[in-house]
Amino acid sequence: MKVNNWLLHLGLIITVAISLVFTTIIWFNPATFQHDSKSSTATGDQLTTKTNKKLGDIYLPTQIVQNKEDLSYQLSSSKVDLVQKMRQQIKHWTPTSISQQSFKTDNDYQALLYQNNALVLNYGAAVNINLFNQAFGQKIKKFRTAKYNRILVLLGNKRWIYLMNDQKRQAYLIKFQSVSIQNFMNDLTSTNLLQLPVHYVLQSGQYQLSYNQTVKLPSYSYLINKASASSLVPQLLGSDNQSTITTKVQKNETIYADGEDNRMRINNQTGKIEFSSYSKENYYDGSQRLHVRRLSYDSRLKQSFLRISSLSNYLDNVRFAAYDPTDSEAIFRSFVAGFPIMTKNSYGTFKIQITNFSGQKYVFSIYSLQVQLPSSGQQVTLPATSQIYQQLLQAGLSANKIQQIEIGYQWQTNHSSKLVVDLVPTYFVKYNGQWNSYQAWISARTQTTQQ
Image (cartoon, rainbow, N blue to C red):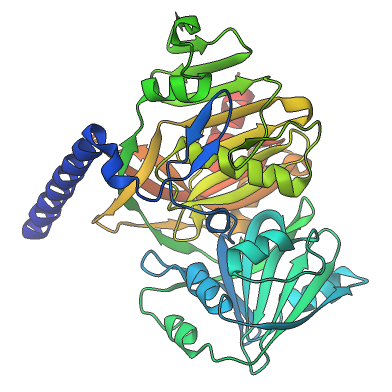
């Protein structure tokens, strides 16, 4: 055991050392690693896209569920990205037709959702068929603005998929020419694959996963990247008039402003950044400035992608996670093995709010995931979702205000190295519009009761 711990510690030191070497190279000669950079804009002046990720890489499903033998299992693996594997399969399929189907009752719709011998790829929020075309390399021309929030793929002889819309109880059936998916099916027998028994619960107009029994999930350790806060100032506030940028320090915050309705706040302790702008020309299409008074949902998602791609180099684990229509806010989170990272300080998270009449706000962090490290693989046992729900009620939380319960990963400081973060699984609860861990909600309620 001591030998294993020593080897683990040595491996961590070597990995961190290698990362520092590459970080130094990038710092002094960033062009070395920017061969795939593309020009895009966000606000003020033209910005450089920091990643080679494309729109379809971010607007992908976040979960994958297998229906077999009249049961459903969420599939999770830190070794194999099954969503990407399925994506590569579909890219080579040729569609022959698409048709719309409507379902009169919830039971009829659920019958399709639980279709036996099928895979269900779930999104965090609705996207449209335009984005399906871009993500899965298709050229479907009908229903291109139609929204859907999950993909059901039949695994039998028929090469059919359904793009399902929970809120409208609709589906778009796409039929393809018959092709083999045996290579993908082989991945489902991987020994590294977790199969977690689940069922669906309708919450806030969308079916969410509920875990039938206790769940054992591994913790992870990641090397993290810390962006330079000073580099974001000219990037977000404009680089032509540096002399007009004012700086103010208030307690733990540094506030930058350019005198033209652009402001950036940086929390010096947590690294959380809040940027707001009310410039008249905030919306862009490639390198062309496109000033509009209103954006469609499709355009809003595309504009949000342009923002996050200009803010970070590290989007490998980032997916579209949610959309708040009240605030016109798109939320992107980092995902690990099919589970989101949920934090108060926006670690691994981007919140992009683009309002009508050109207003916009960004909330994100200077910290992002970089490389997964060898860890002890400590398993964490979580209760069934129904048990969490009962604990919340027993603590005094209102059932009417519990909007969503899901498993995610907490971002915790690694005490051995500031360059490493530990990700620990737990349940998160959206209560009265706010996300927090279930332990935090129960603790807060207990303290309120005792006062």
